[in-house]
Length: 101
Image 1 (cartoon, rainbow, N blue to C red):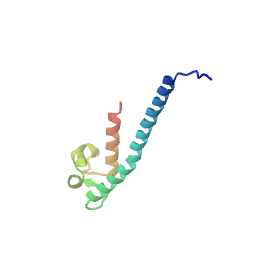
Image 2: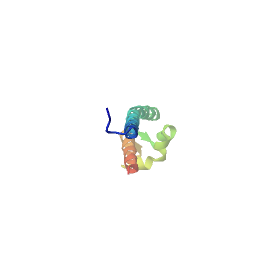
Image 3: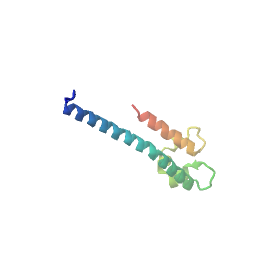
Image 4: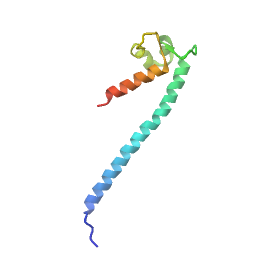
């Protein structure tokens, strides 16, 4: 019995499928890691929020969240002198979106 495809063609097809599967698995791993990252962010935020009011002042951010401290004015769009976890998440989301082609 003769097959209509050459062995090299079949090998190339398997290679393409393997690469696609690896890329897909990597994308799933990145998305799965976001849940862990969000939980870590919540824990770090709670530890930095010394008075437990659900907001970080610039001083609180400076003591426990250096990235938030560095970008505090950008995150605090309403200029209230404090940022919430939602403000930080919105800032991070906007930065990710800006990096997308």
